[in-house]
Image (cartoon, rainbow, N blue to C red; front, side, top):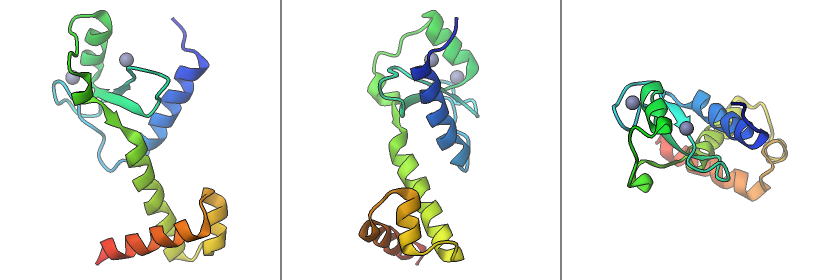
Length: 125
Ligand SMILES: [Zn+2]
Ligand SMILES: [Zn+2]
């Protein structure tokens, strides 16, 4: 059973967010640490459910059904944004980039970068 391009790119996206998390997520069903991402729908690669190996296998084998999927679903795009903003702020603080440089690297507008930095500054206090 191979995986297609869409699945691979979904896994890659999740992996990059996961690597940035301070703590690896726990399984949503049994609470075991260091869960894997289960995609109910590969069209939405950042909407996932964290499941341990066992629960994931059982779910795919149909040993149990998640009836209220929304309850378990996590939208990683929010985490992705938070992580991105943190990175922007760190780079800015280090003086690694100018605001214009950051805007270019992260492909966000200059005013947006400014707003992100101001926001992070407020949070630090
Ligand atoms: Zn589990
Ligand atoms: Zn799965």
